[in-house]
Amino acid sequence: MFFELIATIVAGVGAAGLVLAANRVTGGRLPRWAMPVAAGLAMIAYTIWSEYSWFARARAGLPEGVVVASTVETRGGLRVWTYAFPYVSRFAAIDRRSLRTHPELPGQRILHVMLFARWSPPSQLPVLFDCEGHRRADLGPMTRFGEGGRVIDPDWRALEAGDPLLRAACVEGSDG
Image (cartoon, rainbow, N blue to C red; front, side, top):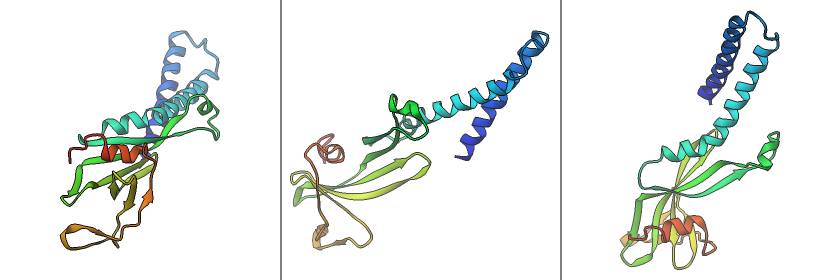
């Protein structure tokens, strides 16, 4: 966030510098308000570009084997243009590299779900997916494993068959 603030200020200073140079070249014919208006417009333009390009930049930085499963588009607030052009402010990804299966439970798999949000550090959560039962259970420090590696009494949550996390965990690349 700090670097984006600095980049926004640099965009404003750069635009003001261009107007200053243009004013010198034209012999001082530009109006006095041109420099602050150019700086303000450049800062607004950079901020909008940064918001709309965040998802593409974050996705491009994901390592191979991490698949974006779902996105959340944001509308409203003081950004009235987002009603017409929403932007992605959060997304969830599945880390296919973390895939763990149990030989006795072929329809279940444990994968790390990575959660990304604008202005927040990413978080990671191991999740047990039951591909055949269309459900999931978040695993945490209190999760107990029994003999042979089975999860003991998972706290299942029912999911729709088309749930994007379930689909990414079970259907896409289901070669466990």
